[in-house]
Length: 141
Image 1: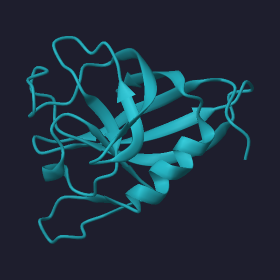
Image 2: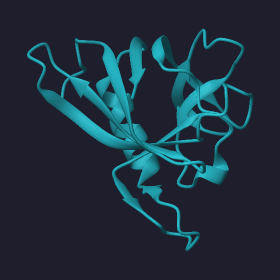
Image 3: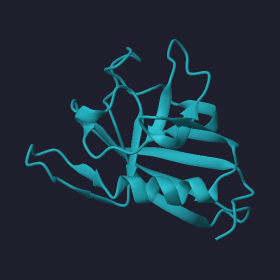
Image 4: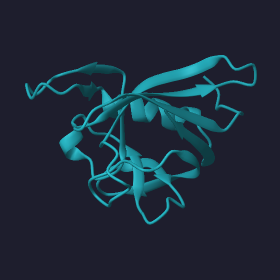
């Protein structure tokens, strides 16, 4: 599949609780057809507090980034009062500190009665192949 020329990632937060938020992350082409879709997992909204809250809804610039911890992943830029907000591999909400985890399925895999995302590394790698080095993300309910 070729790289998306629309250069916009869309995150719709669909199911929120006091423990986590599940959503749908997608790329749409110039005809508004979905060319990629996966599940997202975030911390719940706690007034944008560091390490315990998801980030505010809005439009953000994103760029690819590399670290020892996550290899190549995505860095969401210019989040108010926050830094190093990433889209990276993780399966469980307890692995997150404000970042966004992605996967291709949702299932409680650790028995804590909370849905987790599965195949996170594979999903991230597929997304890396579809997006340019810099693009926008739109986050909404």
